Length: 268
Image (cartoon, rainbow, N blue to C red; front, side):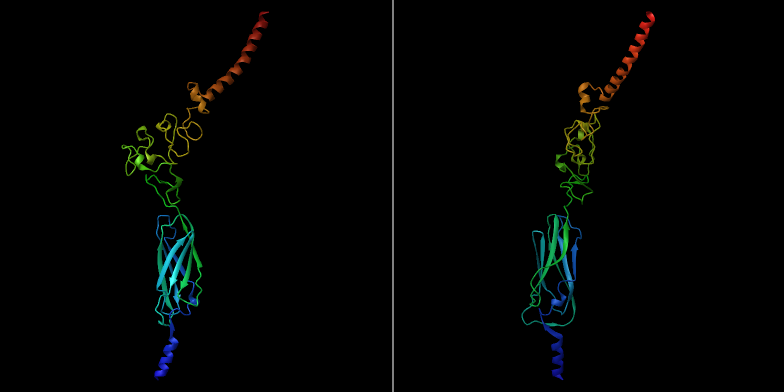
């Protein structure tokens, strides 16, 4: 009777770190947050089922270039006996923050002679540029798709703001001369112009288009009614108006000549 019991136990027991190959690689890889930014610490969890109750009990992780390497380890004393029963398992590691880019997560099993100690690609992680919006205007520096607006803010430093125009929870009166330089008012969505507006004489690239008080197509600071920036150099005369006057003069001259000619013929 005792011999039968021992034989049965022998069938149900195995050595730790044996016959894991059928259960590797892991069935599931979970990434949190699912869409991480460059300011996040990334949580990676591998999970699956194991052929016995001596499940993986150690792990480590590292990042090299655009690879994340997850080592799953069976760390049991030699001769440890395990019960042959399918057992759920999981192990979690943390890494980051990571630079923006695409990373491949690899996993390998250590401590089981039946499984080659080579890395298996598990999944990819895309890390986006974090939104850094110090002046809280919705635009970030550097530009980030995680900000409310994806374009680059050319002035995101609220310490540049005049005292009367606080950007942090204040009431920056954008467009007013007293608020020239207020970082919260300087972004790709801000206005620059029209002509005579304070934004056309503050020596600031208010709308982040690369033009400063520019009367060309970059900004809306051209003289009213002018076809281009040259209008203001002619005492404020509109090029469009001048063009119309010249056309009218050319039309009137021939008419006057005809009237004078008919008058001279009657006099004869």
